[in-house]
Length: 537
Image (tube, rainbow, N blue to C red; front, top):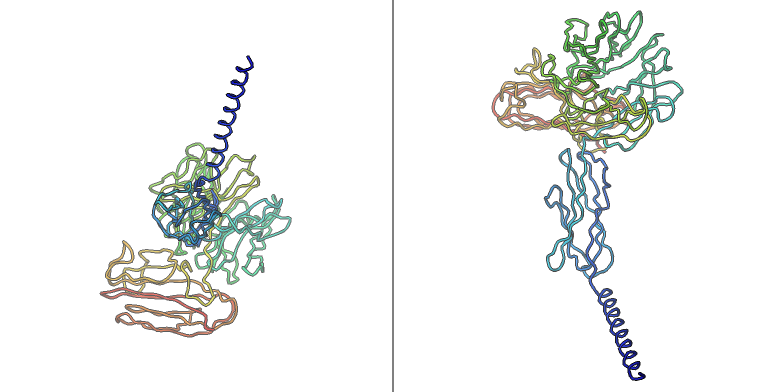
């Protein structure tokens, strides 16, 4: 019996030793095994909006041993590779690479780690949205009453522009960055005010009536607004040089929500007649009124595109208010959205490819559910910009004015171009569009579908804002003729047929806004024109 106990105890001891040995071995193997490589994209954050042309810092964290290099890929294509300075190290390796999105839309980012044995470990892909740059002004109840705020088009850099107990609504940008908006109590009279980039403000109207829906002309020299200076809201035209407003319409119920054509000659607006709401078009002198929509639905909020070929608007013809677009003659009406709770207030991006608008999200009650969205017109792709439980509404989109930092004029300085089918800029322009910069080399081709490759002319108008009195150098290159006007004064004249030639003009500008006008014609052969400027130090 005693012998058996000894055998049993010995077997148990052996078993314990074996188990203990396995445990020790497992712990040793686990502690000495090479840990797996982990790759993580730290920034940008999921859901973060980016802007076209903005340099983005892409931060990656790689943990593990044996990583010899890291590669950053966008949409499956490698855009950069970084060698690891210490492949045998055990610490986390953090890299930062700069990426500048060149195309708007959705992009997939991925970081890839390459090991000694050429094995690849990749991060989870990150879907990022790239939208056009600029600032969006809008009305919001974030501080109690409605005030004007601005943000960049990616929903960042929020800034409150107005303050007070009264409501500040319906912002409109001028080409030089002036903001016009209505100010008044909720049910009382409204006045149109102007706010300059330096913070100075000025009342533009003083009538004891509802002055609302201001809309700057494309050159910033006139303002449209609606007012009930009588029995109903009607459209008025105000020359900002100081003349009295001129009444353009004579409706019995409502005429408002005006939007200019890019050439500043025509206006689309909303009319209420016999309980029905439709969109009409008139000339800026009030003549030639034309009805563009005609149905029992509520068609309103028209917005003329910067290229002049389309009009966005809102209609509830399918039950809820949705975003539509049509040609300027009212044909080809096409729905762009299908959001369950409806949309309002479309506003074009200055390049004409996107629309900002307001959507009822359902995240809050009543108008507090309204948030700002962007929509790419080409394919209907939508991006939400604001996220809160207060009312954000009435967006207006703006590209900043030209830089005066001493660098050549950056892209998207902003010029309105009128393109003619003759060399004398006579008659009506065949094409009117927004050109980010004047820097074209058409060669033997045509600048637009409606123009020939030869015998055309262009007039561009834009603004330069000088922060202080400084000396500038304007550089002009053209094939064939070109002439430059600054504040109406001709400062460069090469109005003849010649091969490509370049020349520079020094000029001192006072602080403030200056009107630039460049006229150009192409005779035959190659076509080229460019305009840049810089501050002389």
